[in-house]
Amino acid sequence: MFVWKIVYIMALLSSFRIEAFRHSSKRCDDIAIVGAGIAGTYAGWRLRKLNQKITIYEYSDRVGGRCYTLQFPETPDINVELAAARFIPKSHTLLHDTIRELGLQVEKFELGMGPSKDTTVSVRGKHLRHQDLGGIKTPYGLHPNERKPVNQLKWEMFKNNTDVLTTNVSEDVKKFYIKDVDGIEMYMQSIISLYHKFLTPEAQKYIRETSGFESLELDVSAATEVVTSPPSSGKDEVLTVTKGFQSIPTTFLERFLRESRRNQLKLNHHLKAIRKSKSGIYNLYIEPTITRNGRTRIISDSPCIKKCAKKVILAVNRLSLERLDWQGLFQSHIREYLTKAVRDISAGKYYLSYNLPWWRTSPFYSDYVISDTPLKQTYDFGTSKLNPLNSVLQPMYTDVVPYISYWKELVERENGDVSDGDIAFSIGKEMLNITNKYLSYIYQLPLNAIPQPINGVVSLWHAYPYGGAWQIWMPGYIWPEVEKQMTKPSKDDDVFVVTNAFNSRSFSYWTNGALQSVELAMPYFGLQSKVLD
Image (cartoon, rainbow, N blue to C red; front, side, top):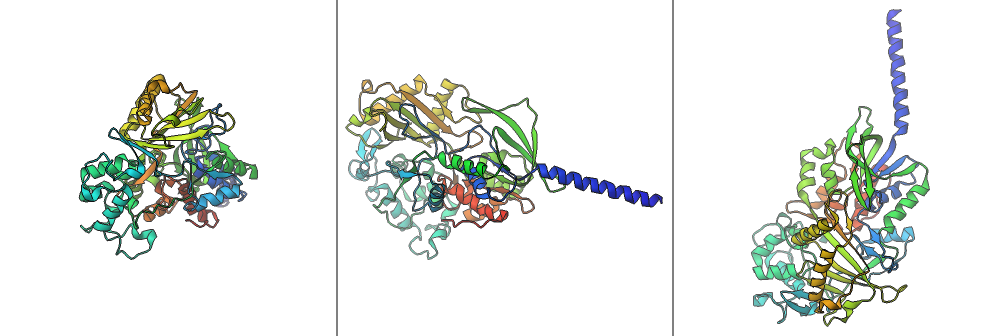
């Protein structure tokens, strides 16, 4: 009798535990998505019809991540894009098809992609047109065989010093097989290493200073820069979204929430740690944050909030993954990929609005200027059709490390310490004076010809949770292998990474890559991946 009672009590306790687990698991998310940028909202949109409890958790009070669109009141029809701004439909078919499926209107991005023949290049105290680079006006001490346009110079470097012409493998993997004359594969060395072997120091400076982005000309994997054919004069069509790039993730979210009451969004939630319970449920330890004037802070004296989920999608950037306390990201090979395979690239953008487009009176006017000043790239963002004459100039767009440090210094003197969660800032007098100095130089106009702006904003992409505007591949890694491992870092866990930081196709500086990274995870949720271009 006594034994029977013991067995009965144990069975009763077991049933209570099972019932308690069922009750607690019902409160858990079926899927928790961390990050409400374009990857997180796209994941929610793709999974919206599963009839499961899905919650998106976002660090700040803003949806969009590195899709961040503003409009100045005086130019409401001009999108001020603080991050992503354009796409190439021929190359970015997944993004283009998705935008059309959402019903968002697109239009030609008038500034295109990269320099045109009449782009102004202002370097070493000289002003010339891009079509004149490599000619007698080029202010660099180049050897005779280096006096040519940058794209031609790069092509000839690969043609003459690597086996690019005789490597007979498919184009999508060729970059991992091409070797230089020393027998070293492109993916095993940096582009600057290649330059040091086959170009003079002046030629290297010529390439770096007349290119729009410096991060693609230094320690990035040489496989990123492989040129397999002569440069073409043709230009691909470049489009933008009429309502702004941020309308893509906000539309994803709207459709996600509209589909089911079980689909939810939680703003100002910072994921600090993940722990797997014995039952297989993931406990999420979340720190509440507060956002004021666009600046987000963790509430330090507030206790963590405990949430739970059956599956987790980490739609966050590399730096957020590095700081996340979850054992799956501390496996030695995953930790190496996370900290060494790619590197964050800081970048900044800066916009000013005026009551007239004064810069168009410049004798060296072009809608795009490349310079060796801290401005680096300067764009004419157009004139308002709703308020004629009111115009927007983008004085600065740069990824040059010393320049980013300088702009950060100016921003901090005006706005205080720039730390985690800070992206967009107001313009101070000192910053404006410096900007006018360099605008006067690149446009060759007197300072008194530059009027006071109506409005201004600067964005710096370097702080947590982003860590940078994009990532670059470092030497020594086969990208598809890293990408596959990082999509599901732990074979024993239903935790998935859908950041474009490890994208092996479109790379992280294109929004298309974020969608591709999500598609790689979809089979784990019973959905077929869309075709990846």
